[in-house]
Length: 119
Image 1: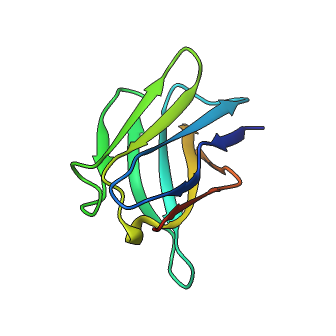
Image 2: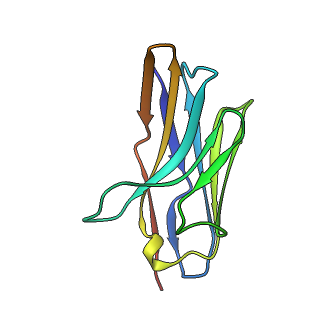
């Protein structure tokens, strides 16, 4: 069983910064991708950024150049540094990990943390 616990959400003014953290515990195989997704009210959940077990990163076009994803392999954590925040970044942010072995794939989600960008 894998548990993901997020922290770091909150209220910030436009142009400000926040850092989200996610701590993973449990059985995560060496093949894995950790990442962050977000869901705004009335919208579908969307990918924000991912980072593979090998360190390759991927970002949504809307956050490129503003957000940075990183992970600590020894602590099994993944962070999302968010700079130059915009009101449209307001959403619930979810930590996610997908991990797999041959013929089996597992998806796990955190409980979500709210990010609100407003004056």
